[in-house]
Image 1 (cartoon, rainbow, N blue to C red):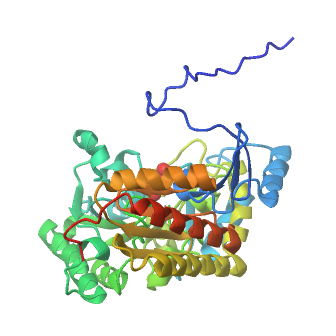
Image 2 (cartoon, rainbow, N blue to C red; image 1 turned 180 degrees about the horizontal axis):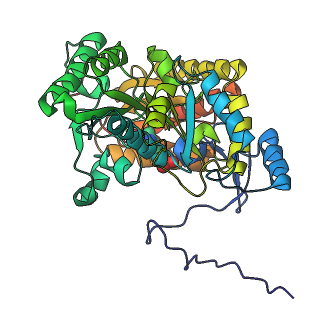
Length: 448
Ligand SMILES: Cc1ncc(COP(=O)(O)O)c(C=O)c1O
């Protein structure tokens, strides 16, 4: 007889990330944007799976049925030894709506970090194959997050990871983050700021020596930590020109903002540029299986073919068949015209409702973001306590999960969330904001 393993109530064998913090709620099931907890609560998830990855919500029928039918055939074969037609189909889906010139896809592993890592290594390998071995430096922007693996973490300069500095790669040069809301001078227009910000990159390239730089790596739009900061004016156009002028690859990180979440399939479509490599992750399979991708150009494949004829990046579970079939179904949904239109309507609704209701509030700074990735920025004295009040009250009174932290509240519901649910949640948020803001005082003097 099979011995029943008792549920370990105190989770004592799990090494926990925050060992002395309370455990999170236990989830019994997920339907669409709603989470059902063990204790009988029904929560609407405006974080899309905490990390903004669950673009099509939980329990999507076509995704589940694709996974089941793949399992009936087989669950796993190694992409290193066998051809997987489904992986080819997924690659085609990623190329079909990519900016012109991006026509090759690699599935390097399970996470966005691995996609960044693979893009950086491939960029360097192309240099080596071309005899430019001196190009081993990467330029990136400070205060960003690109992942947890060695090279990806080396690009990360957020204070929380500072203690890893001694372990990080030294071949990284930082330029200031591109953030109009934070960095622009009082009298500076968006285009003037964009030009200054692009100039900072060019100056860093010149100071470093262009012949030493392989790539500039950055998020198309700043994500969760900074709160959905959209690029200013023609920033990316100028950056693309600079990269071309000095023969530097442009690696865009769209792990957070890619594949429909911004209201376009590739977030950089808004900016009208074609990068050399794009890292995709989270909403590739939208939480139904761990998988990430690097989308790049066949000209680099040609360079590698003529050189060592091998990409030096491999991992056991890359292009895992179950994640691949899940991703195919997810991509059919998130890349459809109807879904992109819905995401853009969601964006307009969130932004207009927040601006109309809170635009004149003493704490208000701005509302920004693309697609289903929207943030409200505010400021007041004791802002951390205000954030705690917002999160707690939204959860306890309205059963809404969202992230109110630092200087902003993020609204990143699954792309499939109905406009009715969006309108209701924003109305509840506004009420909560107005009620709790009475407890706090504006910062004095008010930042412009
Ligand atoms: C912009 C960005 N890049 C890379 C990553 C790393 O992805 P993963 O956590 O899947 O390794 C993240 C994760 O939050 C991210 O937001």
